Every structure is written in structure tokens, then in C-alpha cells.
Image (cartoon, rainbow, N blue to C red; front, side, top):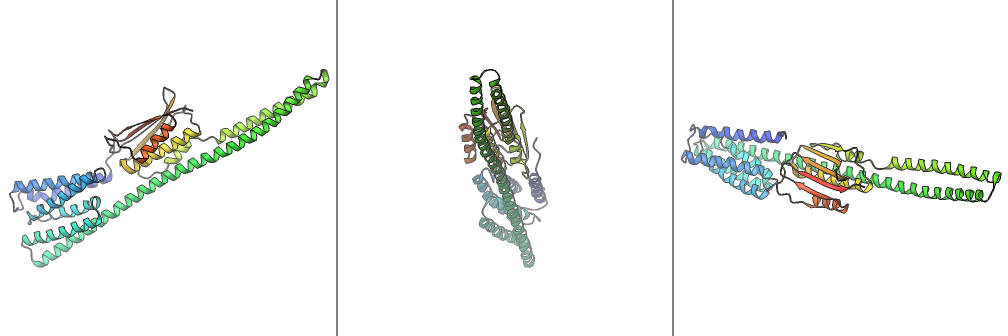
Length: 369
């Protein structure tokens, strides 16, 4: 079950605050310049527009901008039609704060200026003196400006943290691929040495056995003994070289764990079946696939947990399953990253399935080496 994050609790607190400042007017304590049912309808529409703008600002930016524009107008109407409602102008502070997430800074500054003018008019309608109007207007202007600037700072910090996490994943993946390439070069060097060594020793062994074949009795014994010694040395050299090759082989578990280690804000778990066998090409592909999955989760999913499992399927293919607890996307439209991931898997003769109905789930199947 997905846990409610801190920003969700903050949004709930803001919503409750908006309801609280409107409560006196809702219960008839403060008078309105329009019929109460009409004012209540405007007020409820304002809250609904704010919720739509706040919830759609990442996935549906156009919808969020439309809802925000409506919220701005409804906010003005709400305040101007209930000028004696006390703390009701706080609604305009909330409107300005949400604008930092939805519209460009210049538009946010225009909203603050317009909100300030509306507050001045509302205070004047409430019968406040010139000094009270000036003080109240400046106070709300400062509150709006500080709230918007704080929101912009939070947005920038969030973006920088996300970019840092993405760069972290890319750097780890590049390091793993580079290390595997280095090991591949070392294995090639060892293979060449093994070829030269075995070729020389096999030539000596063949000559000794050929001479022994043409000798009888005690004359053949020295050649047979030397052939036996060469065969034993050859066997020892082969075992040593094979041991070095095995030690230099890429370890899938170690490689993937290195890629996902230390990602801030995302709990990543990787499970790899003990029977999974991955060569160099498959290991490199899995590293890149996991890198793209983690990057995509950080960038788009708004998730707190990601679980990746790699196992050998009943049809003897290697199956990778990744699932997060993010918001999902019923109609998945692959971007450049997911298309690149799919192309990598297809290059090995595999296939990829995407499911965004509950969180985001990716299943990739690749032939085992």
C-alpha cells in the first residue's frame, strides 16, 4: 500500500485552511453582496478549480493552466462578494502559491498584482480607513510574494534533486559498463596468451609423441615421459587461465546493485534468481534497462518504492519485472527512454510489455545465453 507523502499532507492542510477561512461566510456569520447560495457555489467552484490545477500540473499542464485561470477569477469573485469575511483574502494567497507550479514567473507576478488590487477594493468595501487599507494590502502583498518565492525555491530544489538522482544513475550505469568493457579487454588478452601457450605446448607434445611412436622399448620412454610432463603443464596452465577468466566475468547482481545504490527519495529493491545466467551482452543490456527504469521512475512516476525482479522463466528466457507504487498512466505513451529500452531488448530477440493501470509495471523477456 502506498504511503501518503509529506506533500500530500501539506496539500490537505492547505485545503482545510481554505475551508476554515470560508466557514464564517458559509454559516452566515459574514454577509455577502450576492445571494448566499450563489456565493457558496462560487466558493466551492474555486476550491474545485484549485484542486484540479494542483493535481494536474505535471501530467496535464494545459488542463492545469485552464483550471488555474478559472481559480484566479473565482478567487476575485469570492473575496469581492464577501468583503467583510475577515481572513477570506487568504484564499488569494493560496491561489498565488499554486501559480508558482502552474504558470511562468511573470504570470505569477501579474496574479499577485491583481490579487493585491482586489484585496484593496475588498477592504475599501468593508469600510476600512485608508491606513488600514494600505497596511492590509501591503501585508497580503508581502505574504503572497514570500509564499510564491518559497514555492519557486521548493520547485527548483525538487528539480535539482531529480536531476542529481538521474545523473547518479547514469554515472553508475556508465561505470558498470566501462568496468565490463575493461574486463572484456582483459579476457581477450588472456585468450590470446592462452592460444599462444597452448599452441606451443601442443606442438611440443605432438613432436614427443611422434618420436616415441618410431622408437621401441627403452628408447621411447624418455619421449613419453617428456610428453606426459608437457601434458600436465598444459593442464595446469589451462586451469589457471580458466580460473582467471571466471574471476573476471561480470557479476550481474553486483553490477545492478551498484547502479541503484544510494538513490535519494526512492526505495529500490532488486531480486535476482540464483539460476539466472547472464553473459556480457545480456548483462550490459540489463544494466541499461534497469538504468532507464530507475530514471523513468524518478522523472515521471512520483513513486516512493520500486521493485525489480530478474528470474529464469519456465520457457528458459530471462524475465525482468519492474513495478513502482507511483501514480501510473493508463494510456502509456513511450518516450525516447522507453523506446530506447525496447529497442535494446528487441536487439537480443526479446519483447517488452508496459502497464500503467496501477503504478507503472514493465516486463521484459530476453533469451538466455
